[in-house]
Length: 222
Length: 270
Image (cartoon, rainbow over all chains, first blue to last red; front, side, top):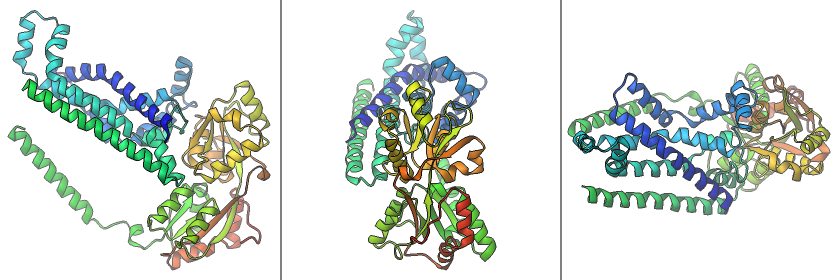
């Protein structure tokens, strides 16, 4: 069992969720309540990772952000390291690739709040911040929770892009999905089987708990 | 769900269903029809094998379909019933294992010996020095932060790279800086794209024009690692064309092409 790889995957997924939480709330709320020119385009951009093969993004990371390219050199000068083969690079990739999983459920959550409720909150003199915290978030909570779980589970499962730009470095870029792949390639079926079973249990438990939890929450709110 | 939305969803789903049925009904490409036999080859043959297949086609009028991957991965796919007719491995152990378990016609034939080369991208602070002396110096003074090899756990060239680095006494120093390619072609990609300062890859890849144009390379002494005995074998389902291509690869013309492209020719050791 490769515990380093499992811990790395959990850390990657946890950080992805933490970073996407404020981004998702801001972007989801904005898309739910605002009408503006090019909104269709903005929504398409958010949904793009759903249909874009991870290899496309992996290619751009390798070539456009590679040490030989101007962007890569700029990045290296600014941050002092490269993007590929690093945990930060994987984190960036997983944030971009989880945008639809984070934003779309939150957007639906905010859209489901009746306009009168928000108007009433404003009438009562609640500042936009307090309205968000006291009224909107409690109502949109199931959407927010779904978004967080989907992003978490999706990061655990991300494989293609990590295979392309990770380099399988233990403790840095060898996620549990890659570790399983390496075990399979090395004909170590027992090792691959143990890790796969554990990942299966973790993923299923996470999602089952969320469904149970959001159903209870739905009953309480409904 | 509101009924309008449900109707839209139904329309969308039935549209998708129709499109799917349409796609299934399309004629499949000839390669899948059994017209062209599938040849699965180690990724160090990425550049030379298409040339050999084209020459074979010009000579005989028969064509083969090529697919590349890591030798271990292909061996596993064959065990799971992949429809390959000829398998060209970078490491004969995989072939002999398949032969032992009855997946092949005999034990096949040695077609080449692979060589390991140090590949350095243009503009790298590292010198293309096959004795690895400059690599040792670069590890000491920190000029090398990333070095690419194929994964030693399952890629033949990765295992030989580890042996060569151990022989040079650099393994412990270089380990934290290694990036592992899934196969040797990916390791070469890591190195030549400048994402690593260098790498130990197949000489056959380093010589290929697309890679040679973007970096320099030097041979690593063959005695530093166990030989890369590359063996090919016909699989149980192989047809006549695959058999002819198999024989063609041992002709003097084909062997000369392999020799020009970074492989050492097997002499008498069949």
